[in-house]
View (cartoon, rainbow over the protein chains, first blue to last red):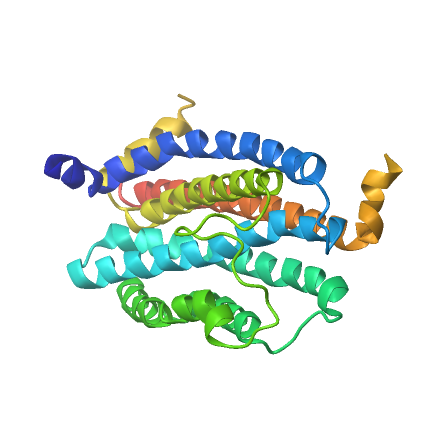
Length: 249
Length: 55
């Protein structure tokens, strides 16, 4: 176990692992997306209250979940980087930011598109919506902060602290629909209770969430590879890697 | 078939949400891959130019 951990913590090994994992995450994600779309758009019946309009759930909930998952990953990786001064942990954190920002954007916009026909408005300053908007700004702040600091170590530390502090927003987003009177409906899925929606509506949602999850991990691998190369640019193994390509092998 | 696209009157909303999701997901995959390729290209150029300076 520990030798495996130490091996993974070496940049070339980390890079190779990410390279090997990437297609194994990406292609299953695409297959599951196909199955999930078929289930969500064709198999699942119309909702008795929202008609076919509820089908937005199949793109809204996965992106919302991944917007939070990406943030927690970014915050945990930053914390590991700050505590144990691990460069590789910061590679993971940096790679999370644009992915998480994209999912947060999708969550907000698909939510607005869903809100218009069901609530009669694109946007309300509701606890759930507002805290999700703050999540979007946290991602943007993280990326702008890194851009502003030229020195990598300084950028790692400052943006790492921002990511760790910002994690308080995650429980706020999650519990906002319970703590305050919200227009947003409470969670459709819960780990502890039996699901409150019909099986034919449920399985496409679970498949879509899994597809988005795998896609996020595949994107993370691509981002990690770019980060590791950038930070290890003077290492011999990077030279060998790039050089080997140059000769067409 | 036209029933399917109408989505019980919610067609505009449902399809705009799905197509936007599709566009953004394709875009982030494309950007991530382009970024990796650009990084490799840049490092390769940097190495070649540093080799020329120190023969």
